[in-house]
Amino acid sequence: MKVIAVVLGIIFIILAVLTWTGAAHFLPAIGLDGKHHTKHTILYAVIALLCFVWARMSAATESPTR
Image 1 (tube, rainbow, N blue to C red):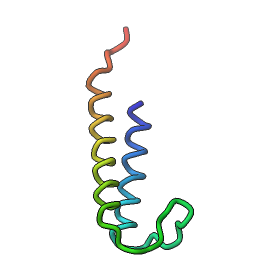
Image 2 (image 1 turned 120 degrees about the vertical axis):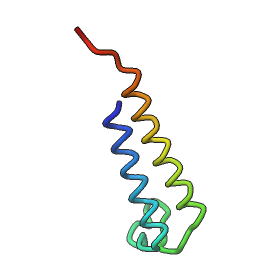
Image 3 (image 1 turned 135 degrees about the vertical axis):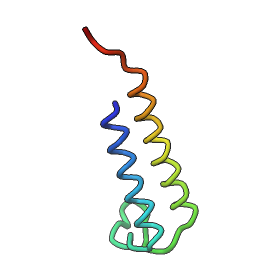
Image 4 (image 1 turned 45 degrees about the vertical axis):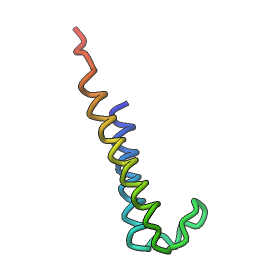
């Protein structure tokens, strides 16, 4: 689960950067039209942060196998 959380976090960081810079004009299929969407940028950054917290918490709760 840690790998999934980290991969999702990286994806959402990339989406946040693309929406912040306006370079997402080539992704209209997922609702990005290349304009600056501040709320979307904040949302993607918060979701990325939550994914990284999820990865950290899932790593902390794993018990070593013997």
